[in-house]
Length: 355
Image (cartoon, rainbow, N blue to C red; front, side, top):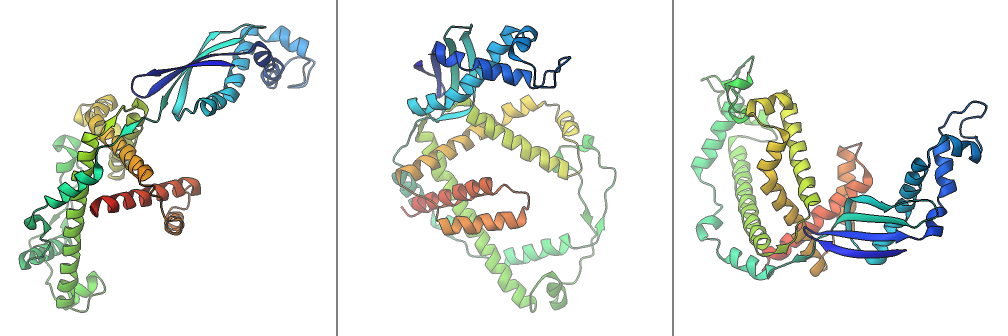
């Protein structure tokens, strides 16, 4: 087999080649047998007709197509391995020459894992962390914040006026009418907080609430700082992004969006009509987010590769057990990949945050 590899834009390659005559011909009998398996012919049991009968009933072009498909299904992975091509997704295959007693000519175009050139990510992380102001670092909790949160809780647990016959024409999804509390709020006392959870009294509730608000502020600061670090690293990285990775992230965004809309009791088609948009319009709207998400994955993966960061096997096992316990239909293999990815990324962020 002869092959020629040509690099294309957006991290794609074209593989042009020919499969030798004898190799291609070796698939003739296999292809004919496969095509004859479901062929019903008078006087013969299904799949039991002799070769000469099958040849009279099956057009040669169908046999050739089946031979080509079988041959390339077997040889494509070998080409990737021999040429050390890290392919992504399904390839586009075009047959350039096909005939009996001749080599099989083909062209295969496939996306490949893009080369990612990273900036000095440690220097970037160090600068962004040092630029965090004392005001931003202040995660102390005021009495007013505690009282405001308590008021929100009381309002959320008050008797509701139920809205009915919600119509999409009333406004965008985020401004649809919601349940509205009455003016009268339940009294905030020891009995009230005990109904909220394992709290001894009002003071105990306020103490734990303060701890939770502080923790939330710390997490928000952490996420905000992480976001600044990775956005700067992404902006300064050189990545020839393949379209397939962007499309994959777009599909995830649309899937989550459709799930959220459906859970609210609305039809996704109706919501699109309300927005006066199509799925293609949404893809255009979210393309920037999808590209950024795809680049984030590549950047984190590259840093973990450079720094030789791997997830702890024991932690992965615990995370997988947790996933399978809560999602009975989850695929263990995919759960393991997910856990490895999440835990590895967390270690990468930890490295960046400790600069």
